[in-house]
Length: 291
Image 1 (cartoon, rainbow, N blue to C red):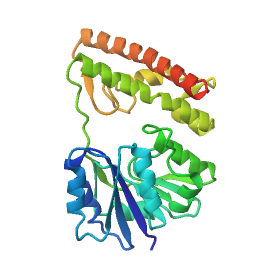
Image 2 (image 1 turned 180 degrees about the horizontal axis):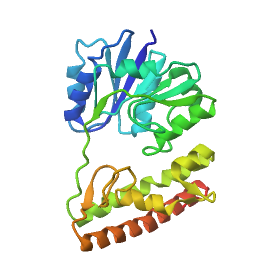
Image 3 (image 1 turned 30 degrees about the vertical axis):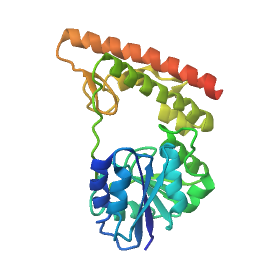
């Protein structure tokens, strides 16, 4: 039986983290496994909780570091992993009892390098062969946050291995709070726009057909504006409602009538312009044109 190491990077998520760890430590799995938690400088009592919670739990290992970002936290977990399969699991995901078994069973061929129960190309609940992680150099810390999962999957695919989706059940217990007030809303939007500069970094590192399809790139430099519009207006997922919001589940304007429809349309057009300006700034920053 293949053995597995589950890496959980955490930051200021004390409440949900306990439910996540409870679920990971109660897996129905025939092989050996361990759960590695890397606390990325939390300030909400996570350190004290983990030090107490870990007592007497032989399959749980805890590491603390200053706040260096999720990529460095995951890399620390990978470096300390003992087993041949390493699985990234977010600190707010509660796994079903058969989750780990189904994840490991996804590696049913030597050609499979990445297995995910999330989506193309990776995210939470994504597993890798440890030897390939070492060859690929782990998570690229230049990203710090956003697109780092996809980059790692692409790096392993570039080594000649395949990406596979599986059905392994878990609950993503995450609901991002709606910003309160205009200033908080502006900060939220600017933060999300800034993240999209990493689209440029991803494309620079992987100017492949797969990356172009993933980012919806046309003419070699243009992210399809229709796709950007869909992201801002809830239409990016099949069956999505037409409303102004964030892909993280926040709704800013509900569609309750003609006035709201117009406002949502204007918000979508504004987002398209702003996200392209952000990518243009990323193009200057990373030396690769993408808007």
